[in-house]
Image (cartoon, rainbow, N blue to C red; front, side, top):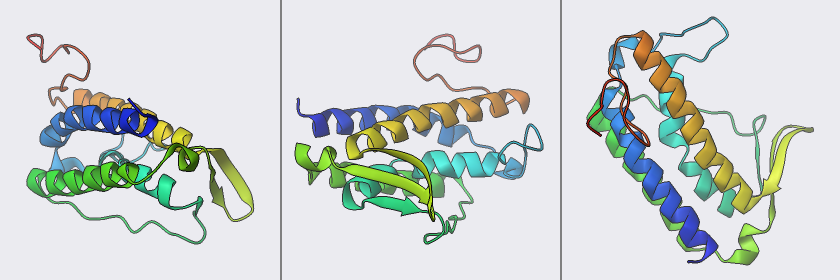
Length: 165
């Protein structure tokens, strides 16, 4: 299996788990936050949905400069809308990875705000970081779901709510 095939397989596998969290999302609680310093639940949710796009961004650009590319968050109002958008994001990530070779994956990619560099890694490293971010933020969704009394979907095994996984 090539490196790009490994990245595609991981993206596909994590997408199946993420879909369970999309289906459980409480659209009436988008402004909920567990702490004043925490992200709003809706912002975490949208970030998880859009993270597969980082595969496309990593292999088709050399950087993301927050000062030059402000985020214009998409508004999602239903599980169906969210699932459709997520499927589009995953498809774009998979397709972009399909177009690359190992030489591109070894190029350096930078995350910055103007002159301030936040993170640098290979393009492959950025795709892997996006996978890790998916897992991390999906876990945040799980904590929020628990606090809101929403059953927490299984990720890699059973949860207190889904023991027959």
